[in-house]
Length: 283
Image 1: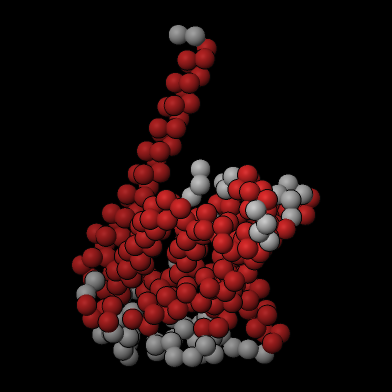
Image 2: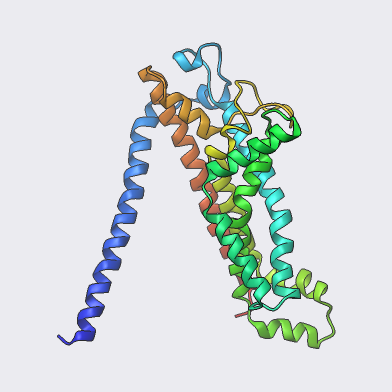
């Protein structure tokens, strides 16, 4: 066997091993959450709010945390999209893709992507203290939006970079303005990537605990106002797993199962929507 075939076999083995490790880790996590959480999962748990003493083993459920996570996820995703989409359109339509400015913006987005979520939580808490605000649903939405904005922007950016440059030139040659090109042509071509970025960012937002720990607070009540505290599933899981009561810890695994299923549904939905709209793409 010559050197080239030896190198190919070595790297092929490494890739197969890495794939097996990744799939095995995912399978082990799903198996653990399913086995430990399913026995404690019930209709009451997902349709009722915590009653007095829920975290010491009494009756109630996590409906407040489910709704709180969904509301924070939707609000943060909408806010992040309102910022990310214009930024990416500006980079691709009004600036050269490889200009110094574009490279700098992408670099800073990459840096923001790598910042730990607890840092965003600390920043959100500092901003709340400066403005004299208390922990609330609005503060949680704002902080989570900051967390997922670079993720969404870079994902949409990569989707738009796959669009043939000749398509832009064709639009301009036909007399279209840059705004018309962006809204009628480029956005349609990038729609599958935009939808995927939005759903992935939403899943990231509802699954984060550190960014909402100091900003959204926690409450046993249903979220009723932007300016009142809101519960989230990650914090509900954290509080339940931290108790000394075995039945409450088992509920924590059930809550983790609910969150895992939500994220799994979002991932599947992202795949289906991408396949649905991919026929509009010019290759």
